[in-house]
Image 1 (tube, one colour):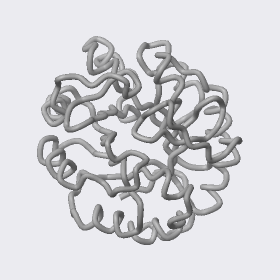
Image 2 (cartoon, helix red, strand yellow):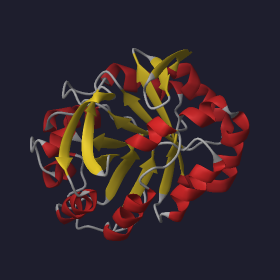
Image 3 (spheres, helix red, strand yellow):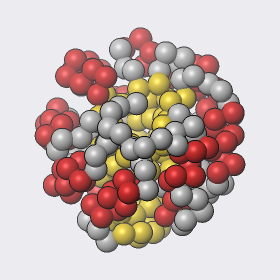
Length: 251
């Protein structure tokens, strides 16, 4: 299971939103590029970057910062937030990142989804954000009537290979990941490589994720717990079985 330290961008800074609320912002670093370098120095080989302003506005806002992060981080970088059009996705690709994370748009636009699969192949990650088991869209501001497990199962038939699952109720709350939902998701969409996000607060949370022993849970995103220094990147990598020297490559 790969560790993805998170850098969420808002107003040019590295922040965390509590439960996706733009009125509840925690600022952790005024310089996101320096934050990426810091994670790299600690041993991180993967990074998850989200353009929060882009998610709200519907198109990349911080592409220039993301390009600087990709240039500074000698590893795999995933980039999401506002990927709701072909132009937005092309902008993301141009930053030099390794995978593009798309969400709202492809779940509502089958033509865009097919284009993204053809354009990106293994470089595409579909983000499935859920609040109380229902899909949330438009930068987490709207909760739909679509069951997240049903949507995940439907994605299996499209050619999507990677899924990012975020439990919004756990995100930024340090209350532990939703293990029950992850088990259900793993069973609903076994061909997908699933990256878990939301709620990790301790090394024990990471141990519990690893002990699920589900082959298709391929990664975990950790944000606030690292910023709060509840544990280090090196400690997390050791728990996840990745206590190796830094190398490039993909998950």
